[in-house]
Length: 126
Image 1 (cartoon, rainbow, N blue to C red):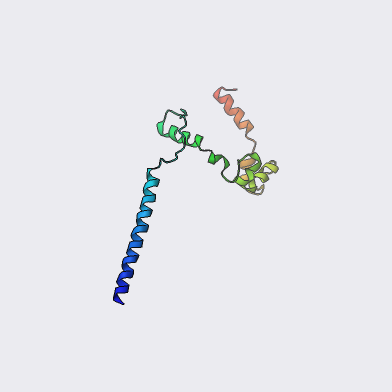
Image 2: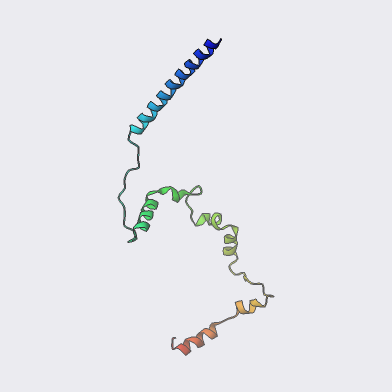
């Protein structure tokens, strides 16, 4: 019985050694193969700052940023960026942003054109 256990252990050790040797050979062959890197593109000079120029070149070459969020963001997709409030703001551009009953409403909605004209006259500008 003891001989069978010892025999089984040596067989398992042998199998493990063979499997490890095969795995190591595969890894070594993968490491020896040249890696497929991205083609080197000519760098453009966007800025005199070297670091900023490198970042801008990386961004210019990588087109992923153009389609972030499922596609290009144009004025038609503005609501996705700023929310529904943008559409409401553009639709109701004549709406007073301050409550008329608020004491600050007089200050915000006051016509300052006379004050501006007097300041121009005082400074000598027309």
